Length: 159
Image 1 (cartoon, rainbow, N blue to C red):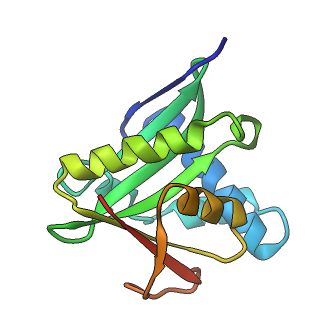
Image 2: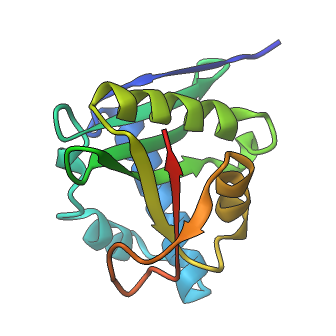
């Protein structure tokens, strides 16, 4: 039986980079309602701030299922007490295998280790699966704490 293993990993490791590409492909393709091109994915990842997902400003986590890179997510410290959950992604073949909840737990632990007492996030209304994961994991809608073109709803949770 395959199991999940989740651990911090450099955002630019080969597996983390591939997961970040798949994440951007998924969210961009859904937004544009067409497949994103390799060039568009590259442009979206260029300067995306992922380098901040390393202590002390953040952390990036990779999840493996049966040893295969299957999921990722990051936390970014916004201030002394708040961390932002970002880039939460499970490859489609690994959805429904309980990885999202495990990944959320690890990311919350990483945020606490960085000093966070509250986790916040923003997402789009069309990302219904992600929104369901957040709500199942105890997140509630909050007022906007930031603005941007790809933000429709904001969530928060006390850690």
